[in-house]
Image (cartoon, rainbow over all chains, first blue to last red; front, side, top):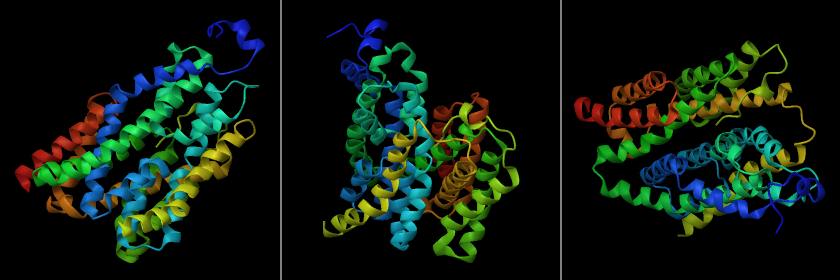
Length: 256
Length: 111
């Protein structure tokens, strides 16, 4: 094995240093893993309270791997909404993964190296990965960046498959108030993440529009409430507060 | 068990495919795409509003255990979280815990 930190070797043979995986595995077991676990315990409690089958709830982890999409899927399934509408809503929340994948890969990919590890990393990419890629990677050698994130993502995904059943069964054992608190973790975390990542006026407008329009949409068309408030509110926010200046998005944070 | 397998069968096209297509496009586009195009900005606004609406849906029309706690407590707990976010100088983690703890306290006091 060649010295990972040697720049000459980087230039001579563009390739990833897969020993970086283990650093990512260790990082998954620290604070970000704990915060993520709380959200997924809440997700387990949520699917229990909706009467959603545990096996299908756990399957959302490897199949979707983005908590807003997972919560949308189980919530809308529970409401008996048409599958096409569910697919449209889940896909709309997942579009944000596109700029997120681009943002993560732009930092860690090695031009000239094989591209399959990039596809593998995109499979694990979600908001936690993105946050850690900007906060932790400066201490990791460049050739280990992508393997480091794959180690992190694979460990988190595996751990969440264990955490969700824990939340599901804890919800039955806990007093009702504590069980309700666990369910509440997810909406509280989502809203605060949206606020934390809002940078421009149309972000704020979109948050406000979604909140204000949902009760109205629910009143007029209960089956379409999320789609009406999401697509209607987001479009309204975009049209009213569209940034006129270029150079905004590249400096901003993808958010979830 | 059969119900779970049926849901998973529906999830592959309606959950997995529609999610992963954006990740794949991200990998393919990493060298070419314009992240400032109007289309991507609109998409960002819609997905933000959709998640905000989802939060509101869970808060005002919950099912199961959360429905046993009063609407006032649920809304106040969200307000506490937002307040804690600014008091702690924008710590999402602490503010989330504060919001959840507030819900527990408010539920015991107000119902």
